[in-house]
Length: 419
Ligand code: AMO
Image 1 (cartoon, rainbow, N blue to C red):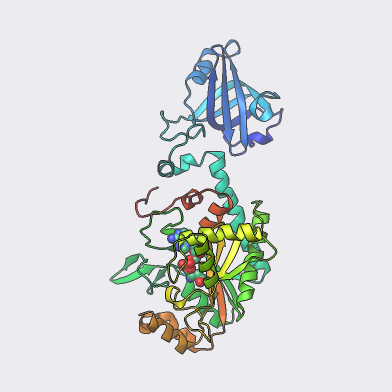
Image 2: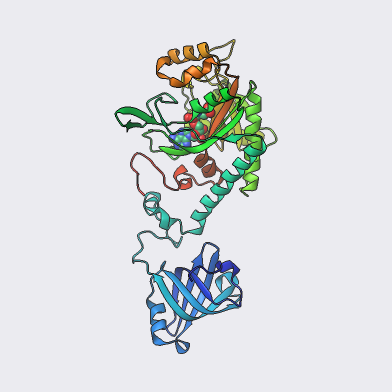
């Protein structure tokens, strides 16, 4: 039997351990093998004068990172890593690792990110790397728990679609038998359409696809989108929902991020002014990455907040489905949430009136005829709103990883499709 107790739980009565070989210290007549699993590590002691020749030789030769099993006596040893050691009687090399290792996983020497990702599953043996995904798992579980407590239902929308949800050119076409289809850029049009049913609070969690040819620290071509949509005509509800949701999920996942009692809110116009005063290059209708960073600094300096909402973006750069201001159609009832100077969610109130929605599309140069979902808007669609949140960006910022790829198990970008 290979599976034994986790190393951290080993009792003195136990006698078999299994794990990867982290390190070997050969002192001639004494060999120390440091063995680890996901829970911790233990030192195994091989004494030449107490072992048969073959076992001792094996201990001398076994390669780092091999999967091995050791039988022996576990005892306390304050000086050993983890406070315990095992006096070895037998050694079984269950699966020997090739040498040299393709990447350094001892943590002593840094391998560059591209190479680490090429060897991702080996990279993941490092406890600090594993921890990122353990935290992400806990965070997503907590998000879901929170949504269920709030009365939301999780729905699973298709990711193969006949319409380019978010417009623009950033979609991946797929050959669907003899037709052209797209990988969904988001479940936007579905999560809205379903509200027609009387379900009034829904969310979806899954990969979405963007053919963004960028090499930045924040863009992926496949990312995990947490998409929320609900019946409401009040944007404030959506802002507050995000605050509570994040506060709950960070706490439950034991990720230490401080969420203020109220997240500061600035209009797009004010945001541009603030960013300009801090020396950022501006774009007329959108926030530049630099402007986002400056707003992050501003929120921290002025409000001691890692978060800031920017609301009321110009229609010019926002998607057709957003609700425009009645008295100023240049502006939309929209928001982005910035976390430590990076956009992590975006959303707003939607245009739920058929005619207005079709008009918005035309203004964006889109043909309403080509958007199948629009027909549902003829049958009593309630006013609604929602948001989408990129999970990888949230985790990257929360754990201060510096690159969204660090928070992505198998990042997809223009060059990388493997593993
Ligand atoms: P948007 O396109 O702003 O909005 O995306 C929502 C959130 O998804 C994340 N995100 C990304 N993460 C990694 N790589 C990318 N290339 C990438 N693009 C976006 C960001 C962003 O805030 N349908 C709307 C949401 C809505 O209105 O409900 C949408 O998709 O965290």
